[in-house]
Length: 255
Image 1 (cartoon, rainbow, N blue to C red):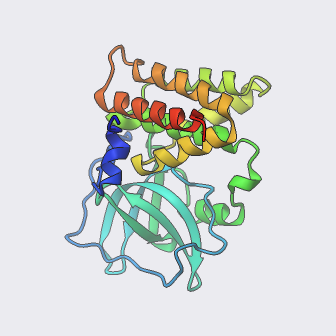
Image 2 (cartoon, rainbow, N blue to C red; image 1 turned 45 degrees about the horizontal axis):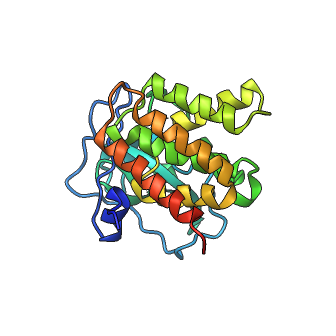
Image 3 (tube, rainbow, N blue to C red; image 1 turned 90 degrees about the vertical axis):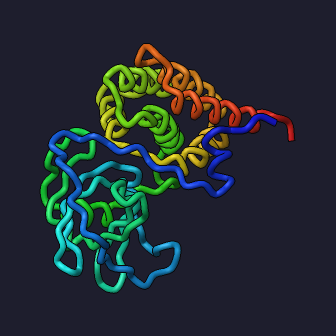
């Protein structure tokens, strides 16, 4: 059996460093020697948690419990409440590790791709907690999972080009022929802010294959085009395309 490049490495317990994003205006992390960050007492599944900001890329200025300030590139996973406080669970790309950031200690937040200031962090994450987006509530869930898979491929080389976003737009037009121009534009903007991890790639492809085999085929075609969007094929992007093909082939195989 052929070895699936990324998924095979994950299954062997290897830790894959996530590609560092390159937002405008990011001058460096200025990390303390050691993080002093809260570890709220919660279960593995946070009751009432919201994934409205899940897999979105941000740059935050954070002041930890010891008063140490740092600037970090992060990928949000979920917002949850514990011990009377609101927390953001995220992957810190500077530490290449999961962190629970107290929202009250996030002093500033910017878009993880454009570097645009997004306003008061507290408002962003409390709104996400008040208006959670869950798989069962979203009629576009399979398409959003497909976007996560495609953006994992697009970001494998550490950046996303306009040509790659054009491929994503064409994918959406094929996947959602009834959608309005405004909805397509909104989904392209959503995709542009995504920074899915290699670890979520398998899950996203599985979700699409299980929910909509036709959509899965459209996604696979877009993945091939994405890998060639720069005029050459990046090795990591090609490996992820191969992973996707193997996963989809497994879903098509008779039980």
